[in-house]
Image 1 (cartoon, rainbow, N blue to C red):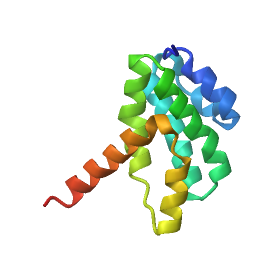
Image 2 (image 1 turned 45 degrees about the horizontal axis):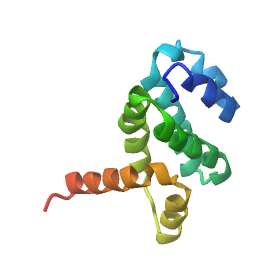
Image 3 (image 1 turned 30 degrees about the vertical axis):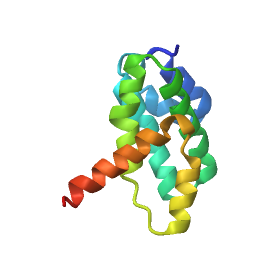
Image 4 (image 1 turned 90 degrees about the vertical axis):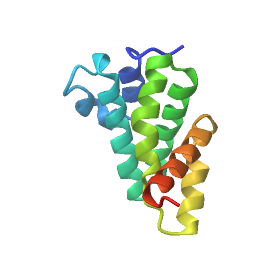
Length: 124
């Protein structure tokens, strides 16, 4: 089981470009800021359609959610999934591409986030 103290090192190993950003705060004690850093970078890559850079981030988030302890799962649910679900998708091709990148361990939660987001925006 992955605990919150292991997450910064896993992120640095997967996405070395985040090393400096993660060292701006004692990330090992701030799991939510650490996951926010990962989600911000991932969203930037998805917005710019750099899918090859976003893919390892998404896979890592899926692995953290699947194998993480309760604190790690909570951070993914509170920061990564809502940010990912809020990404604007302009057309069907981009929607299919985005959906195909979502790891299986996050897919159900991702869809639930999107549905709850649409419900809040367009209450019926």
